[in-house]
Amino acid sequence: MARKILITGGAGFIGSHVVRLFVNKYPDYQIYNLDALTYAGNLENLKDIDQAPNYHFIKADIVDAEVLNRLFEEHQFTDVIHLAAESHVDRSITDPLAFVRTNILGTVNLLNACRATWKGHFTDRLFYHISTDEVYGTLGETGLFEETTSYDPNSPYSASKAGSDHFVRAYGETYGLRYIVTNCSNNYGPNQFPEKLIPLFINNVRHNKPLPVYGDGKYTRDWLFVVDHALAIDLVFHKGKQGETYNIGGFNEWQNIDLIKVLIKQMDEKLGREPGTSEKLITYVTDRPGHDRRYAIDAGKINRELGWKPSVTFEEGLSQTIDWYLANEQWMNSVTSGDYQKYYQAMYASR
Ligand code: NAD
Ligand code: DAU
Image (cartoon, rainbow, N blue to C red; front, side, top):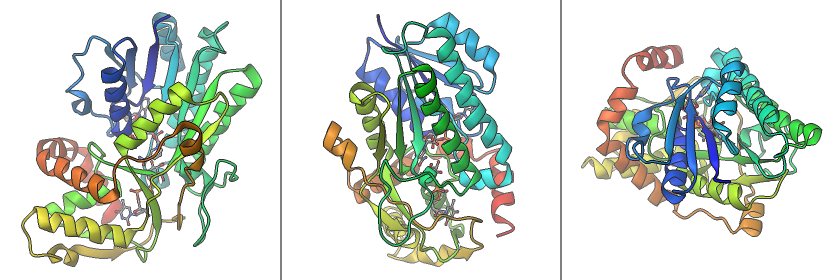
């Protein structure tokens, strides 16, 4: 039977790269992008493929169980790749319930829709859940997150993602649903909403606005180019083993302040400014509450078992990302109009 894959959150940052890859690479699959088009979802992200015969868009909210059940009955999806989520840690600190609704309730609604419509198919259909390294909590100066690391989430965002991961595994154990979970590190690349560090700082450098560095700036993240994450998702979807977890990361740790200096160096060069000019924009601000000190992924399992590794270096990926933002000012203007200004004021005026 031809595959009819439901990709949730496909109008968002990572989801749009996954949808594009699957639509282009697998013309025999029917790809259904289900997205509520929140502030983070933007159909502009997919305008290059939205006329493809194997692409279908459904505007729907995963919090609405009735609508989901109807859609599953109507379309008979054969697989789910679940990315839809509230994804920004800072927003989870101001509105945790929005994260409980979408990330936990929304995931359980999807699992229930699979349970109801996949009878007799639990072994040949797949629920692939996209999660984050943040569920593991924070690391000290050494060590890496492994697939066996205990969950220890610290923010409402990571607690909601941990909850959703637990439900996916519970449905596997209890009802026999075929599932895989991947936990990935920080992504960066084209189409990321400018509330996250890299696109926010690209936009602010461009417009000579302050660069709000939280706390001492020595927080560490492991950065992965979004296209490499999409390629990993493709590989896991096709070759991953039932019930397994795979960590995905860039083998690429940076303290925030060092990353910011590389970003400034590249941007000053591309904007024709004197080297280091934009460093004066760095502004240390009040820290994020409960800020995790360090994340670092051991991506050895996916590398050994499925042969995946990142394809671009950080400097290359960052350069491509900056070029994309500089060439797509219209995209930036459209996503930063309206509510974005209110968000920015509320988030940074008090810091
Ligand atoms: P994003 O915020 O850019 O996109 C989320 C998408 O989900 C948007 O298109 C939004 O409209 C949609 N959405 C939100 N609530 C919805 C709802 N109730 N119903 C239907 N659609 C809804 O997020 P992202 O950065 O692309 O992250 C995608 C997934 O990957 C998330 O599950 C996130 O937890 C995970 N993840 C992200 C990163 C990262 O660095 N960005 C790293 C690891 C894992
Ligand atoms: O690790 C994976 C996670 O990465 C994903 O699950 C999340 O969806 C994604 O948002 C991201 O979470 P982070 O909180 O790590 O990303 P963010 O871009 O918000 O912040 C990166 C680091 O930069 C973090 O240490 C906080 C800091 N920061 C962030 C912003 C927005 C600043 O210093 N200033 C800022 O203005």
